[in-house]
Length: 73
Image 1 (cartoon, rainbow, N blue to C red):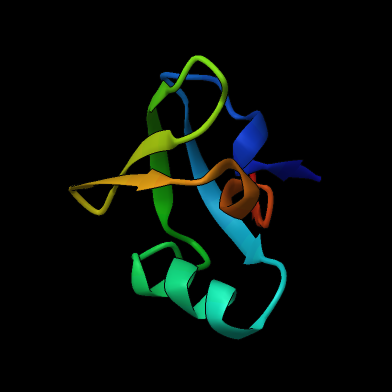
Image 2 (cartoon, rainbow, N blue to C red; image 1 turned 120 degrees about the horizontal axis):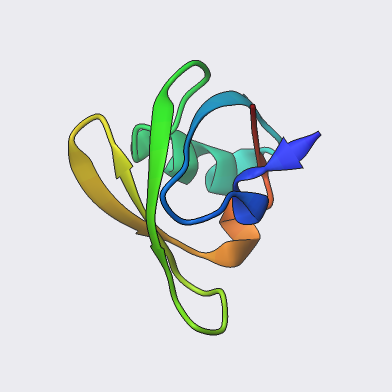
């Protein structure tokens, strides 16, 4: 199992599952991060937080803790 937190800058991955539940999972899904969507990692801040992504043509920033909940392949 690999999570979005472990993806290197410049890689494109596909979301396979979002772990967790409640408001955090809803917030992640509201950003467009759903099963099957491709995610391109544009930039990671020096300390690993935030992680900047391109999803469905939009640029997003997510926290490292949220990235750990998103399984990818």
